[in-house]
Image 1 (tube, rainbow, N blue to C red):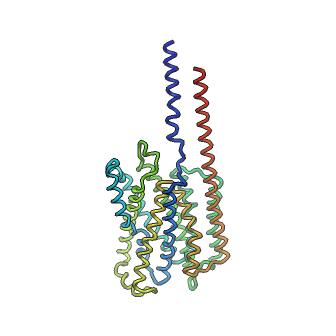
Image 2 (image 1 turned 90 degrees about the vertical axis):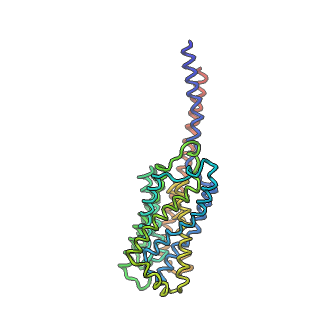
Image 3 (image 1 turned 60 degrees about the horizontal axis):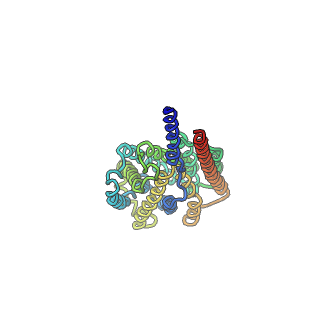
Length: 384
């Protein structure tokens, strides 16, 4: 009899433990409407001028590719003051060392920063040959590559909606490829256009690879334990990762500039710049700040939400970049680009709708599991 009571008591204890541990896994992974996500989204939107300023540099006589690439990465020193302030204020919350990046994560992020610099260089090659309205359409294909690589590295399950988005985002650039004259600047031959076309596609593929790899590195080397594991990482972590990637990428760019003798050519290029010497340097300053805002927002979305949402936000910038290019650079926007834009936006909406449906299904499944556990607990209690 005593044995039965002990067994019953153990069973009651096991069942009573279930609800206490379940809530730790029940909350959804994504925190969509949080103020931090809204803040990061605003940073991404503020950085929409980066591609526009890059094209301004090339249109008015700039031709130093590694220099233009470094402007996409060199804004990271702007993050050092807020990082230092955040770490100083965190000394009462577990100490400064507890908020620093783990050593293995530092190594992984530095390698990804070097690879991202190469991706930015390839993007600069394409941006030199193509109008912003064309290169932005092609760069939107990174969402398709993002979905594929996220499936391989972070376990993303492709839904019919995401598969449809991938197809549409591939068809959009194909439409541009069928009519290259619509996107080709005046006086540029077809060979240069096609080279820039495929260089931009290659840059999109590389960017689509980097984003899931950052999420993978964070999940593998940046894990946290205890109650902190259930919360998004603090923003000082995001700033550290972004600063480290920018510093590693800047080193790669400096090596490229040294090899191509960009340092010796900078003064001469500034004198020959179409907008004047002063505006030559102002373009660099504003470009570095704009790209830094964009990169910081994207990094925040990757670390605190997912690389998929980061890819979606890059796709969201597509129509904004198109409008800015038409208004400020007076670029041609005809029917072929319009069709490609509609297909790309259709793919983006399909992808976003599929993610929303998937989220609702997971929430419903989680509620059903909780209801089943509660029913099992009640039945065992009654039997005892």
